[in-house]
Length: 310
Ligand code: AMP
Ligand code: MG
Image (cartoon, rainbow, N blue to C red; front, side, top):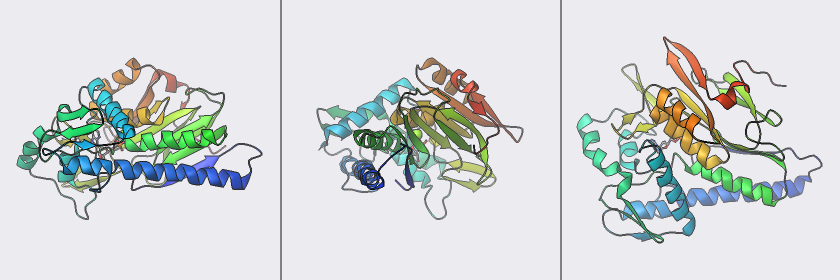
């Protein structure tokens, strides 16, 4: 998944060796999901679906079927802002290249008909992409899903207080707390423009948190920032927002929401957060060269622009 994983267990009286064994199992679970969902391979389940696009359906695991069904649910709910069929456009931008450059408009326009999530057919455990050149990219949701599975492993180990951090996608479990709760973890929000600094912090209880930002994978060309979160209606990076931090009862929902709120932008994004039960979030945007933040009602009392390491 091209990132780092940290697991912290805070239970008192934890036996170190026992905890290490369970943490190893949590890492193995994340690895397993990566091997299923990565599009950087022709042999992963996603890789095989992509390889056979426009030619043949591919039988996949029940687990991947559920993950794709969840993805399509987020696509429907967001009016297509969240779109796991975005693969061809992400590849055209190639943000991980050594010297990425802006693709030609013509090329993007030709690819747009291929990123239609309604052309993903699912029949039992068979998945078929209806057009040649289509490809699935679970980059906007797989980390959150993997966090949930790692959280399940640690719960099975009997732990009652822990945090899984998969590249900024967090799963917090603190027995007896709810998502909006000042009793458990303090989350530091990275400053989107100053490396190593923090923008603010908030407290939370059990649940998932994810951040999507225009600083995570990007390049500059002629003074313009091009980043990896694509507005599927135009095939270009979504504009208007610098970063979105979404909180939800679980990691997969937080991950999907961070991405889809980013694409929807400040107004429509905050509306969706407010209208979806169990979701909270913050949207950082730039105004006249200054960074500002919009907070959902649940976060307003918990967020601090300053933070302290207490
Ligand atoms: P995240 O950091 O969770 O916002 O995910 C960003 C990643 O999701 C990108 O690197 C792409 O792999 C993928 N992606 C980009 N645009 C979209 C979109 N509109 N819907 C779903 N996934 C996307
Ligand atoms: Mg996401």
